[in-house]
Image (cartoon, rainbow, N blue to C red):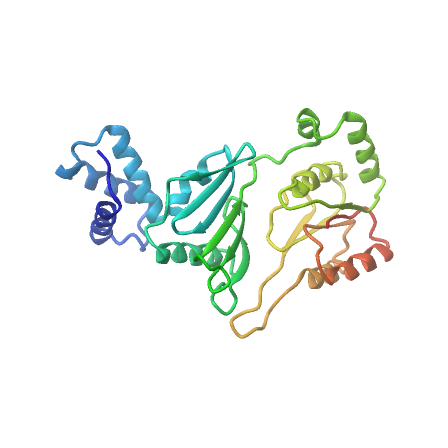
Length: 300
């Protein structure tokens, strides 16, 4: 027995009417309420236990999770999620990009979800400022582009990251580089050489930067600077992570990577790690190196 979109919308609306899901109702209570509603619906009696469980999770995710995206977020084999419009969703698994059958019920539902995501990291996206970078609670990186820039409707790309950052040993095991090269890189990091990492989109720059950071002595003080926080430096306890901020609706309050690099120089860093250098901040980066802040790592 299949539940079509119209039946799903009606069921969800009925559940919403029976419980204020936007209030302080706990997750457990919400799940119990959804389960009771589905179990006592005679029209759903033909569903199997597995189908009912799937329906419960789908409705729950539409209220508290990321709607149709939540199963993809929870799937460890998915590394990237690409939403071209509310009707088109693609994912990357093992380097292969495929289209999935899931879709949002409407463009408005996708727009609502986008606003929830950006609000969670104190960012703004609208017609006046239609492009924004954000992140999910698990650290996944999100890029959003809205109409009129995006012609097919709201577009969102989610780059997922593993719970445990890859080590240099992992990269060796995968054949990315050999042990001799890894040993040389370790010597460069420990000797406080400035290192620039360059590559195309999705080539693994951040993964490689995380692996290099594990060679930084744990006694040092590190400042990380990013557009959207995604670095996973776990071996250095004295760590300060900073993130840029977009301008507000009045065009004020923007904090750029260049601003953060300038500020980091007054924070007594042993090293500065910049997630991405792509503009005028390159000047501040060079000045930082000239003032004795060696051993820094930069994505170019």
